[in-house]
Length: 107
Image 1 (cartoon, rainbow, N blue to C red):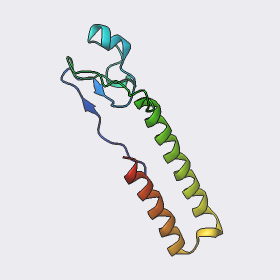
Image 2: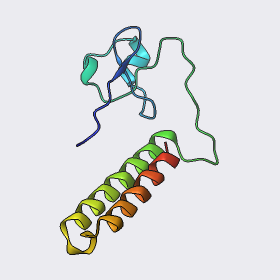
Image 3: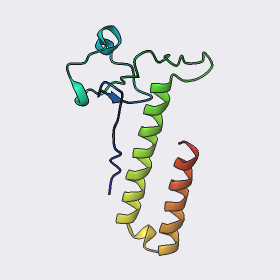
């Protein structure tokens, strides 16, 4: 039911998590004691860090906002499925299509 994408690892075997903050220990030492369990980004050694533009949301914040929005929509869709409002298959399909279109536009 839920999406569990494969993790990308850098050449040292640490997880690459674009949009997350860079692991502070990895940034300083190129090692991470948490390994694949670390929730932070571990970019390829020598890769340039992407700087946020002053007029844009920081990348991590924008990604977190998109994930929160997706979770809210999933919960809303699930709630609608549990009520009599969307027992009509066409209405349920329309709600699902709107949901998918929203996230195909936001990456």
